[in-house]
Image (tube, rainbow, N blue to C red; front, top):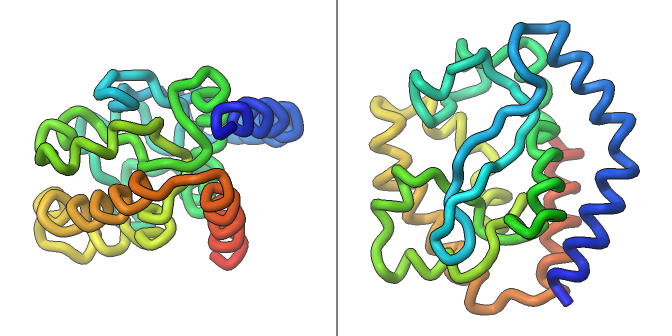
Length: 196
């Protein structure tokens, strides 16, 4: 039932949002050089790698300077990228990943291999389900970039504080996930986007 809901909702979302996608694509291309989409290898269900799609919000090759984005004024973020990230518009292309079956609308956020390799055996259980576009952990940590920007060592703060807490929240979700919970989390996500 969850997979059927994902296919239906992501397919409909891609159709309805196609005009917005076109506008964002033009904005991204006119604002800075580089592709419209940013693709990054993330770890999905059953510990398998997949290519995650996002609208590009940073200058090309910015990921080589670090995997963590810090604060709203990270110099790698483009002018259009600032607003695209602020309103979570960069995440919309992940509807493609949902439609293809790499992801779900709701589930633990997919991580890069560098951080997954640090998981404990218990934390690895988050990979028993498809990763999601949104999750309870991502809602609770909606200001994650600001938290990391205030840390003396953002990477260390992420590994030692943010990541374990988010994984604990995700493990709780994995243990009791159902379609009704997913729908509630989707509405909560939209509410947070509108509020900020």
